[in-house]
Every structure is written in structure tokens, then in C-alpha cells.
Image (tube, rainbow, N blue to C red; front, top):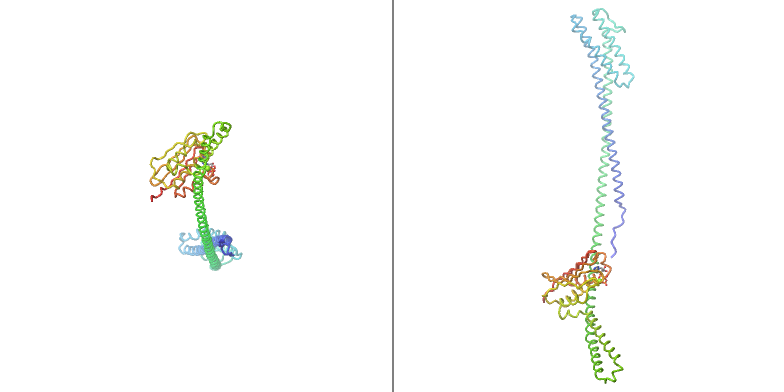
Length: 456
Ligand SMILES: Nc1ncnc2c1ncn2[C@@H]1O[C@H](COP(=O)(O)OP(=O)(O)OP(=O)(O)O)[C@@H](O)[C@H]1O
Ligand SMILES: [Mg+2]
């Protein structure tokens, strides 16, 4: 079944996500810059307002000093009490200081600057007239050095201060208007940026949602594909396992049949031939037999060899003691049928005395496992000690073949040969487990644990 691929779509989540993130970054920067600009311009407007309001305060202070000095002088002239001269005396310094502060201010308008200078001159004139008043009495003079009378000078000072005041108030209004206008701009910008950020978040949420949906869909497809493959692999494995089981059984049956025929048919014929040859040898007169003796003895010898080869082949095909004496004796005979290798002595045995009767295919499988394991020790292990053990543990039969040879890594050797896989398959056929523990340089332990067959 072909893999069902997702419909091609123009939706490219990765690219779009990058774009949205970049846009978000831009909007964030713009928002930061706008709020910076907003706070800087607010601060500037507040400082301007502070300067303008302190300017108003100074204008009022100037007028107050002038009026105080005038009324103090009048009081002095009426009472001749010098206490009344204090505003005249101290006022001058205060006026100087205030005028200095005013001049230091930032006057952008040349008219206003001129008015300020004129104000300084007028106040100076007013002070000169006050001085004359103090020195010569009220009728001593009526004109300032610049030519103005007391009242005219004061009125002019009042007028100029009033004018400056109005202008400053106008400036304040202007500053406030500009601030309000800027606030409106900032609010509009913030609204725009806020809407942009909200739209961006919405778009981001949509992209993430679609990405998640796509991911889940892919995961679903992957999952069902995995399930399909797993089912297929399981079916294949079952098929192969049953094929291997069938082949193993067929081979054993075939070997058994061959062994039986070799034993019964060929064995009988060979024995008959040997008996007949012996009979002929005994019956022929000695003088007839004399020239044939060598050939005749070789014939008997050949017949004996064929019989023993037949026995070995039969034994190889079908373990002889297995059906007659059972698994334990068959294993004992297997272990005793020669040293395992050129380095080693006899195989150490640990076999039970009482083992329940086991079905023949069960015993045969365990025997074949032991046979293959001992062959492996002989071929690969270079061991000086080999041990073959069989015991019953609860409802299990445990067969163990252990050597102290060169060992090996079962993971790397697994696919190379068929001996180990054959053992594993036989154990699996009996519903058990095979453990292969090979430690390079230390030796190998092969353990087969199979459940005891249920007694019928
Ligand atoms: N007792 C052992 N000691 C050291 N190496 C071993 C032992 N048993 C198995 N091996 C290693 O594991 C490999 C696989 O063993 P396996 O019996 O499967 O194959 P084989 O004996 O090489 O060939 P065959 O298929 O004829 O049995 C061997 O080639 C050998 O390298
Ligand atoms: Mg082998």
C-alpha cells in the first residue's frame, strides 16, 4: 500500500513564522522608539512649562518689589521712620538678582529681550526717583533722570511687566497645546502599534496552530505507517518462524528415516554379507583358501569398516541413546565421545539423576543445542575447561554449556553463522529462552531455559 502523503499546500509554516517574528521584532523596536520619543518630549515640555511659570513668578516679584519700595518710601516720607526704607534698600538687590535670572533665561523673541532691557532701565530710573524723594522730600523732584514722573514710570513698568506676562501666558498656552497635540499623536501611534502587535499575535497563533495541526497529522501518518510495517514484519516473522520450524522438523524426520533405513536395510545386508563371507571362509578347504587368504582377510576388514562407518553415520543422523535411554544418557555419551578440543580435557558434567520422561522432540531439541554448543567450543573457543550442565528449576529445564575460552561478542557474531540462530530457534520452538553470554577473553556461557512440557 503506497504511503498516503499529505496534500501539497502553499502553507509554509517555517518561512511564515520567520517573517512574523521579523515583523514582531520591527514592531517591538518601533514601539520602544515611540515610547522613548514620547517620554523625552514630555520631559522637554514639562521643563519648558517650569521655566515659563518661574518667569511669571519673577515678573510678579519684580512688580511687588517696585510697589513695596514705593509704599515704603511714602511711609518714610510721612513718618521719617527709617524702618519704612527697608523695601527700598533691600529691594534693589532682589530686583538685580531677579533681573539677572530673567536675562539668563532662554529668550527666543527679540522684542521680549528689548522689553526686558527697558524694564531694567525703567526700574533703575524709578529707584533714582525714589532716592530723590527720600533725600529731598516729595516735592523735591517730579521727574526721573530719563524724564518720567513717578506715576508714569510705575505705570510703564506695570505695562511692560503686564505685556511680558501676557506673552509668557501665551507661550504657556502654546506649550500646552503642542503637548496635547503630541499626546494625541502618541496615542494614535500607540493605538496603531498595539493593533499591529495584536494582529501579529493573532497571525502567530494561527501559524502555530496550523503548524501543530500539520505536525499531528504527520505524526498520525507516521504512526499508522509504523503500525502497518510492524504488522507486516510480524506476519513475515511468523511466516519465517513457522517455515523454519517446518524445515527443522522435516530435517529431523528425514534424518530419522534415513538412519532407520541405513540401520535396518543396509545394516542387515552388511551383517548378512559379513556372515556369508565368514561361512565361505570356514567352508573352503585350506589349500583352496591359501592363495586367497590375503584378499579374503581384506574383504572381511572392508566389510567391518563399512559396518562401523554405517554405525557412525546412523549415530550422527539420530542420537542412538536418546530414544532408548533418554536425554541424560545421550548427553553423557555426547560429552564422553572425545575431548572437546586439542587444548582441553574431558567435558565436566553436571547431570541430574532423576529427570521426568520427556517427549522425544523435546529431548532431541535440547540434545541438538548441546551438540552445536560443544561443536562451537571445539571449533572456536580454545578452552581449557568445558562444562555441560542440565537441571530442573521449578517448571523449567535448564541446559547450560560453559567454557573458559576466548569468548566473543554475540552482537557482532549474530548474523555471521547459523549455529547460534539454530539454537535460538529450537529454544523458541519449545517456548523457552536462550541466553548467550560471551565475554571476549573470558569465555562463553550458553543457557537454554525451556518450560517442562505438560504431562498428558
Ligand atoms: N564457545 C565459543 N567460543 C568462542 N566463540 C564462539 C563460541 N561459540 C560461537 N562463537 C563465535 O560465534 C560465531 C557464530 O557461531 P555459530 O555457531 O552461529 O556459527 P559457526 O560455528 O561459525 O558456523 P556454523 O553455522 O557452522 O555453526 C562463531 O563463528 C564464533 O566466532
Ligand atoms: Mg557453530
